[in-house]
Length: 338
Image (cartoon, rainbow, N blue to C red; front, side, top):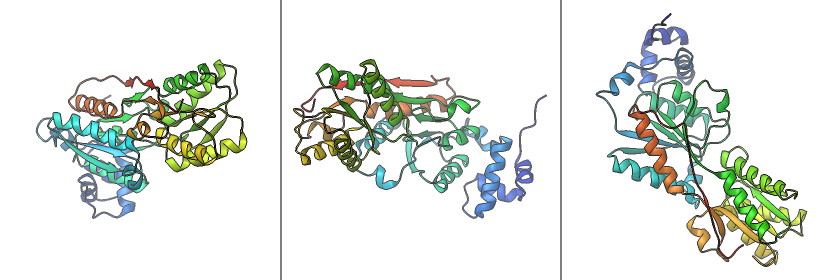
């Protein structure tokens, strides 16, 4: 039996608020008490309400704007981490060529996610890209339930429990990490450690998996310390590894930025690179080429990730069927550190 489409009135009844309050929330007004706003958003999700303007916008009211949401603090996004710059550049280039507008939004906190939901629900954008997700981020699924086109950078953790597929664009993180470790082992290194990335992010999880896989193939035991993709965390983790395993002769680092910190810590400890300890990073950011010594790394096509994110979202918002997963290749770049 066909269920009637939820209306503003049914959402208001479900949330226990007035129709006017629901209308204000749907249209992005800030003149709504937080408890009322939360009740309305919850009712919208539970009832599956999609504003009438969403249907109209498909024909006559498209905004020609698309949001790139980064669930990070602004200080991290606008730091020396070239991943964010590269993704924004790629997204921006693709949208500009399509004569569309980029809207950049941060959403690290529940309040930030709520702001993005209100903005998207009011149809200020035609679709949303979400990159640099942590944990089972609820934002992409919430947007999809509202009928908003969404494409993620990397697969969504916890997505197996969802009744639908959230498309994503990623890279072969595990394969790239395994490639790096196999190169170290082939070059004669016997004690290969890793500085892993955050284990609440797909990139951190998969690169650690690739490292473990390659060591298991070689019959060797893993030696793991954790970082958070920042340069300082790489230095701290490397000092920890040297204290635990003074005989280590190689380290795979899950990002180039952490790799720069690793090189600094090794230099301070009097270890020569690559003579005493070989180092391989991941990303191939510009700073890796000018490190001392230049950093051997696994190159991921960062700007192309942004381009493909935007391309997939443009197709999805245009009503096309798209691939559920786009996984881009990586390659090993040999330089002086290994």
